Length: 367
Image (cartoon, rainbow, N blue to C red; front, side, top):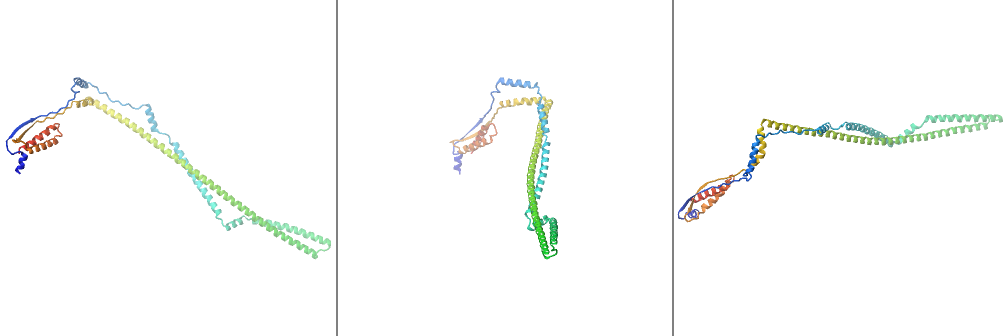
């Protein structure tokens, strides 16, 4: 262990030499412009004039006729009553026409469904209602009267002929009268059938005509109802378009009023700021002059800024007689690093580093 210490400290023999050292280092910066006499004269003249400088008041360029008219127009906005009337009318009429068309279409479809769903019994019942039995009965009765009248005429004529021939009441006359009676009944029966068949055909024709009319009318109503519903929807859609335009116009009016209000508020705030600055000038003109001149002189002041650092250090070194103290060198290097680290915040960084090295070296050499 002792040998190691000797090797580090250098205390292997011989004497030591003690010395004291003083060191001083100064760093400074100067602006060549600030060293110029003419420039200094200009600065001094400006400072002398500062006391007599009259700070002018601030002014605000306010509105004009064009701005006032534009703001009035923006504040008033466009008239949206036309859009409102249009969308209310189109919505109302469109909805009403759509409802009417839907009702008509529903009624027509109901009628067509009724015709299409008729059964045979329903058709026969309608035929019976169309069959005019009273007319048929009247026609048959008329036919009977005509035939009987004709039959009576024939019988009378036959009797007259028989009376003239002297065969009144004989068998031949009776047979002839029976034949005429049979023909009369046959004519009545045949005529009655014809009347009934003709009326059935007429009833059929009338029923078909009625059914065709009902079907055609239902189809026409359905077409009209569909057109009305479609047109009603178009009118309602147009009303919604006018409603959208009305809302857009209303919104644009509000946005214009807001922008006009924002502009007026900015102008008012600028006026307040100008009044405040003028009031500050009135209350303290000197302070305002100082603030105004500082805008020019403070940057000039930085031109003359100088930095300096001065350090004086005294150290005592012990040097072994035979030289070579390794511990002193190591401690000196560490002290220099420590001094440099803590000397960063000082303008004399080199002085602190040198002081640390001297202190470390002195500490190491003391062994």
